[in-house]
Length: 621
Ligand code: GLC
Ligand code: CA
Image 1: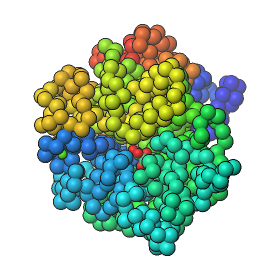
Image 2: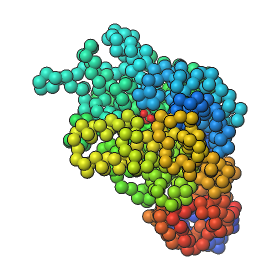
Image 3: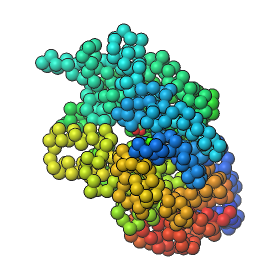
Image 4: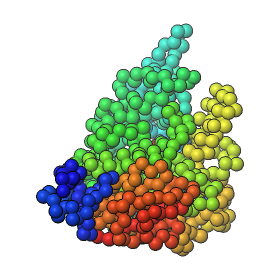
């Protein structure tokens, strides 16, 4: 069989499981007879040989936004006792860890991401005792608690900043980043550079008293910490130890790739000539000392075997991220990279529009899946969090009769990939964005409001304003922060009074009470996904990922393989029927174990794939 040596390379994975020869690749496999009659020596390389097993790879995480989860004391704002009262609900999904967004003492300019005391709980959310109850409640149910660690910046109401602002001689002055003004042509004091803040405007705020500017990537009330200062780093490490000693099991490290900035603070290239300030992530998303700092953080985490996930926005280069998450370095267990979530972000700003295709969607997923498995790294899998619109509304359509089918399809797409799976509160119910009929006044988040105000201030055309509103309706952080829909009673069972944000209009139909015991609900579907990840742990957690029919524009199908076990995941991103010719090598015996239409019998050469259809097929070994 002279064809074999050219078809196969020593690095190929050749699986002789189930009695048939099978090459994991786009080419058609020869039959077993071809092998037996050839003089080739087949070295079986099994994926099983490559994996590092560890608990946090097998774990799944439920993500809570405390202000919007459950209000226990009737003030219209979610709180920690509210979370404690819902632990059985969370446990019933089958997750292992719970991550809560910040509930430290804070003036809440940015909903708690502006911390004024890292060792105290904000009274709006409860007390330290309540956190202890939460820890007990989680631990006694076999779950763990992950806290949000906001290390890039503090609130301007933090004692460190108050002292720093009060005097240039304060021992805390150097905890923050200060620079002399640039002097304009007419002697006016200008910001030291042209960087655009993530919450609009300049990243610099002038302090008249000291005639210096301080640096803030986010709101003016969120001054960035100066990580060059070893005392600052020590403070953050002490805070981490404080919470670990309290019993917390790990951290989500907020905005962690922003802690090292280009020390020269050069002007950013002009990408939007009409704007005074320019997008400058290239100078702060991967600064020169990032890896030194993250290595220090990693040392502490390792000491306690603590869980960690780092938020790393604007960083799409896996060769940088692998330095942090490769198994041998393992500075952080995993990071959130946002390439998939940013798929509809235009070149300039979160709200600049961009069209995308299902093909791009799966190509991005494929890029990270393949890269991490080839480089011994690990992915964090997510489609939602508190900073984005709901996935069913953004990537599909929430007004569609197929919203439920679509929500389950997205769950299949993300939930069966390789990585640690994150579920954001309400995603398990297929919750949607605010209705499009709601005006801008319903939006409360400073990112949205600042952006909109800036447009009004710039007197942009009505057309530009409409486009912006269209993007806000898809991507604003407000959507994910609407109160959780527990049941069909007043205020959706979230609170006994009108909550801090309006309840979505669809709550009577879309809520936890109607879904929990309904086997056909989105909730039950997510529960099955967590369950299947446990039942088929080898293949679904540790299995190799490989796209099937990678150039298909509508179907996103992938295979997971572990030794002799294999699984096929099929998802359609089309809202109409697609006829799909299955690659021959997939037609192997097996069984459907998950299906969003609920009635798929098996595989056929020509499959009629229905709108947003999804299923998981486990191949017999
Ligand atoms: C992260 C958080 C976001 C917050 C920002 C500033 O991106 O997820 O909610 O506003 O950091 O802390
Ligand atoms: Ca409350």
